[in-house]
Length: 97
Image 1 (tube, helix red, strand yellow):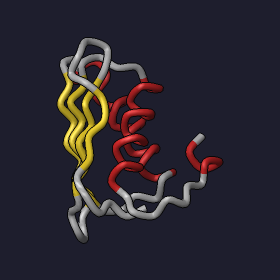
Image 2 (cartoon, one colour):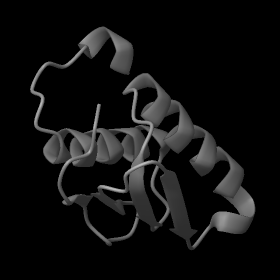
Image 3 (cartoon, one colour):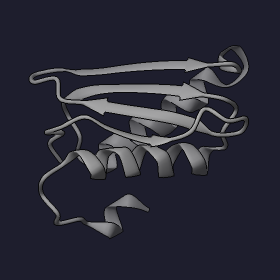
């Protein structure tokens, strides 16, 4: 999937996160800010990387502002932001499990 416009998903409430995506031709720039980064930063990064790989996102700017969200919430917010940012509406739902 190609990110063609800026999009947001989520909130900055406790146990949630805000994901911002924007086009960045030729590069994949991922920024993760989290209140619990020391304890769970590696796991957050794994979930973000895996979700982007499954969605075939290879370029764009991804900013994650985490407030202690669970993995399933990270995945859902990231998927929502990416889907809002693409023009191609064909979605391979099997790949996003």
